[in-house]
Image 1 (cartoon, rainbow, N blue to C red):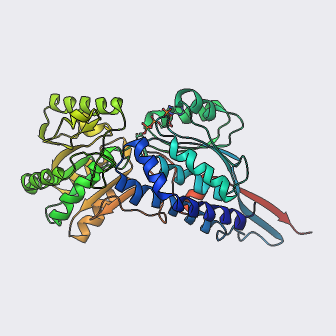
Image 2 (cartoon, helix red, strand yellow):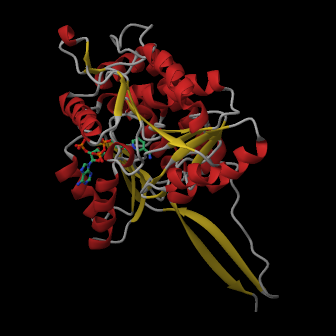
Image 3 (tube, helix red, strand yellow):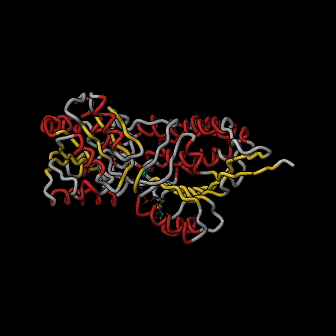
Amino acid sequence: MAPMDRKMVLVRWAELIEKHADELALLETLDVGKPISDTLNVDVPATVRTIRWSGEAIDKVYDEIPPTPADTLALIQRLPLGVVAAIVPWNFPLSTTAWKLAPSLATGNSVILKPASSTPLSALFIARLAAEAGLPDGALQVLPGPGGSLGKYLATHMDIDGLTFTGSTPVGKKLMEYSGQSNLKRTFLELGGKSPNIVFADADLEKAAAMAAVAVFYNGGQTCTAGTRLIVEESIQDRFLEMISRNAQGWMPGDPLDPATAMGPMIDAGQFSTVSEYVDIGRGEGAELIFGGGRALADSGGHYHEPTIFAGVDNAMRIAQEEIFGPVMSVIPFRTADEAVRIANDSIYGLAGAVWSNDINTAHKVAEAVRVGTMGINNYFGGDITVPFGGFKQSGNGRDKSIHAFHDYTELKTTWIEFA
Ligand code: NAP
């Protein structure tokens, strides 16, 4: 299809998703356990905006003609890869699905999407709406099934040209191997994180403390960009610990269908056990548990975990190095800006981070020195469909969102012409 026709389908699709926002938000809350206020106000609108934006962008992207020697003309075109497999996780099923489908379909690929086994519902729902919007049969297929077998089958398939993945770093590494063992399919990965959130003494501490809680407790900490390492200037540490503990009170979990709930349960029993194990590991390593640490709402039978804060953490501890994927914050003190940067960069991950300071020089220097894909200055979770998202180091190699995402789903082709 011509770019303008692809645009029309994607824009219609976004409109249909918007029309079904309430049902989709409910489905996502039932599937994931995330609060209905988030699915309704964040996940569904982000999905609509991603699909609409990519559709609207695609017929405004031009190819190139370079300044070649006389009597020659070269055309540099971006062509679709062909068939793309997209494999996504359970923590933001709808929005990560949109981050993959919107640019891959906009650039003219056909796509097979494998949702996470625990959260296939919203992807199946929006695929039906895509057909209604006029997406040709076969251009999008949703294929739920187990990662270890179906995911591997897709990743090693010789007729699949591109692989886009969001999930854990260990599975991402396997996918690179599968690509090498099969047809070297283009493989783009968005992986885990252990993001640093650095607070200097001269920052707006009220705002920094409120956002430090959002950064780690939002979505129960089941967020790749969660600011799980709170790196605080030593001179304000005690005061700041009090402030974040006060903020943590507002994140006690509740029924995800209640619009007042800020944090729901962990996705399942397995994830709950992982979080509990890490709380034990933190205690065993000598970190000081200053808030939470246990099960909440036990009578409900749900997998609710308290927001949890460890102080006195050394960055070498496992709770500071490993992705817990739960509502657990590790507080690490620093004395100088150089030390804060060194601690922040002492991680296999490089997905996101933030620095809080009212000194523009400190804030900029630190933001530049921390090796992550997205860095906030006096904010956390900043982002928009207009800006790329992805990781450095073992947090991945792809870029979702913005025009830059089109790169992951296209090959550059040169056609060289010589005049007689
Ligand atoms: P996961 O275990 O890596 O699973 C992600 C997807 O991969 C699922 O669909 C899974 O299928 C599939 N899979 C598992 N093993 C596979 C294999 N051998 N071959 C092919 N596919 C396989 O991750 P998760 O636990 O669902 O999600 C949490 C992780 O995602 C965290 O590490 C988080 O940081 C990361 N994440 C990153 C971003 C980002 O943009 N950087 C965003 C969100 C989440 P099954 O469901 O059937 O196992």
